[in-house]
Image 1 (cartoon, chains in turn purple, green):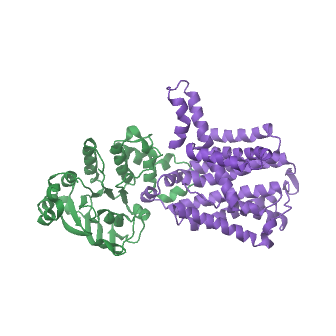
Image 2 (cartoon, rainbow over the protein chains, first blue to last red):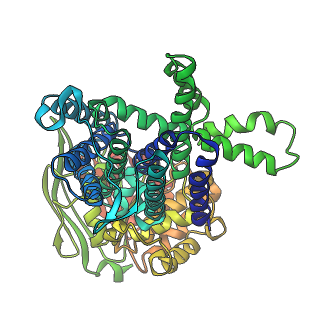
Image 3 (cartoon, each protein chain N blue to C red):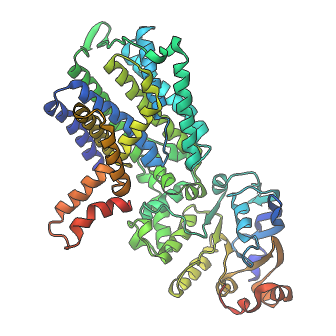
Length: 331
Length: 260
């Protein structure tokens, strides 16, 4: 029921973007960051874990695909799989250590990993290109035995490829969220103490959430590197983690489509505002404050509240003005 | 009353101690809980009841002593493992999954007995995985069938306290640990809770911490009185009521049925 309607909505977004947008790269970027934000949402919205390690997994995906496509000319699909695996492996390491603590110290551990990863990447120019990053990443067509199935040269061709992967990932993540595992994560998010008392091994659950999140984020990082042709040091930076978290929070936690919305909002607004005013991130700060203060279910929650209001044709007099912010606030 | 006393020992604590630095919260407690009885632990605030509870359920580790449950030494096992052995607990302060419906709370509690299944990230919890029978029977038992779809956070306090007990029941445990199940309850809810606990000992063993002496005296098979981290007395309710040490120590008029 709801599962299919969400998948259809995701499909609608994927189909609609080429109709309304002029840049295939921008559209691809939306979906790529949507992947990363969904990975973050699995941790933040479903498990209650605020991870600043997302940039590590993103960066690992970027570096992996860059190295595999430039130095060991591997078939592109295999290189993508390797990037996903690296993202997952990185997440397993970060998760394995970080979930030993809760709350602030958990966040600090992920932050420490993020800083370490940045400086390791910076100080290994032989592998990562250091400050310059890895350049001239090719974007080979999707081919089997020499037959080109899907050329990826133009931005819109590449968008099609990203969109297909996005839909598969979205479907898989929906499946994860609706599974026994996903539903148990919600219990961990709600009340760790009770979840442990009821019999769950919180570490295993959190670790698995981390690995899945890392895999998706690694895929996003790889697709980003293929899109831009470079794997810059900034992809591995703490700022990338921050950006992914901001997208997730603005969209709304606990719902995958909300992450797509958050990523689209961030990327498109950023694209538009940056042409008007180079200090546009300042305005983003204002948006983030509004969400944090009164709209904790994010843009998605706002949409839901408005939708609810619209369907209830004549609500009681005091309800209309107060409802959106009040609903957002109590979630 | 004599039949349950003869039943086998399900849970045994041998010299269980807990120190926090120099502070001795528990100074070597021995306890034998017999199967299918209601065994209450009472004592003034700070007597170490809740600490003993944490030791027995594995929420916190012991500083010394042993805990045997159902023939196994569980002293070093964390709480989630003891659940698999057949222990389940309710909390003194209501601890539920507040945003999730009552039914989902109980399903999660029932599923916790086989926690490996929780790593299944492919199949939704339907059919066999929904634990529907257990959930339905617990819902009926704690009287929340009508509220199955309500988020736990929207229940009244009395309902939340009953769900709290239901969470422990859903694991279908051998032993159920209730930490002040009536805390903060109104008079109307008290009788419901009393009947609920009394009905448990057909299928379960109940270890109860409770401040309401009326309830304790009515439903307990055995009462252990604690004071300053040690066992002061143990016996049948009428023995405890008559015990001079208990009287002079602190119970005073509490024993006649007053409140905590």
